[in-house]
Amino acid sequence: MVKLHKEFSYVYNKGKNQHSSSVVLFYLPQQGIHKVGFTATKKLGNAVKRNRAKRRMRALFCEYSNSLKHGTYIFVAKAKILDAPYETLQNDFKRVLSRAKTFT
Image (tube, rainbow, N blue to C red):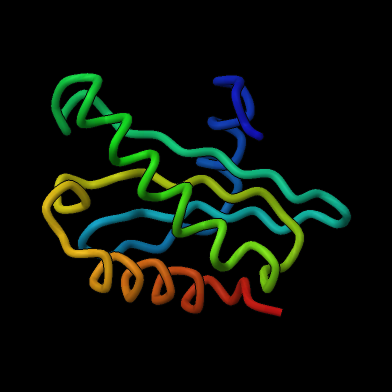
């Protein structure tokens, strides 16, 4: 799990990024490391909304985690993640992961 600001900054600066309407992915390929971080800014709303957004991203990541390459993944929530139906989020998630070429 990515928790330190230093780790987030490193992946933001060195990694590839992919955007969709509800989520942004920052990916840094690394051998033998499988780390993930989830973040939601205060633009989304209060703590309840930010935590809900992170829970939704965590659930989606669990679906695909077994078929992903090693590396560090950071998912950033956008405002649409709160209102979008689950199927739309699934499509967005799959789209950013496939664009970043993270599937094995």
